[in-house]
Image (cartoon, rainbow, N blue to C red; front, side, top):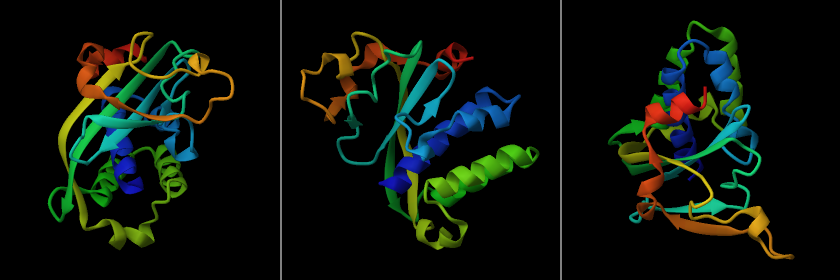
Length: 190
C-alpha cells in the first residue's frame, strides 16, 4: 500500500511539474507527503490530498482524520483520486516512475537533490530497487475534486466533544459535481 501510495503521489508530482515547467525546485518543495504531513501537497494557501486505490471498489477511498479534507485554513483544497490496476510485471513500476522524474530533474541539481531526499523520507531506497521491480501499475481512472462546504466529508468543527481521530470512507462516484479538469485545477493554484 505504501508503494502504491507513493506511486500515486509521484504521478501527481509529475503532473505538477508539467503544469509549472518554469520552476522545478519550487514545485518539489510543495510535495510534503513524505514528511508525514496532513496532505500530500501544500502550497501557500492551497493543498492537495492524493489517494491511490487498486481494489475492486476503486471509487471507495479512505480518509484518515477529520482534518485531511477540511479546507478551513485554506483558500483551495483538492482531492486527487487515482485508480490503478496493480499486477505483476504488466505496467509501470515504482522504479520506472522514479526514473522518469529523475530525468525531469536532470538539469536542476538542487531539485534533484530535494527529490532524492524526499524519496528516502518516504522509505524508497535505490539499493532496494529489486523490491519494487515486479509490482506494476496501469492507470484505470484519475480525477481531481475541489473540496468545498457541500463536499461529503467530516470537518474538525463538526465533531462532538470527545470524538477525534476519525477514519471514514467516501464513495467518489457520488462526487461528479465536484470534479474539475487538470487545467482548471492547476490554473487555480498559481
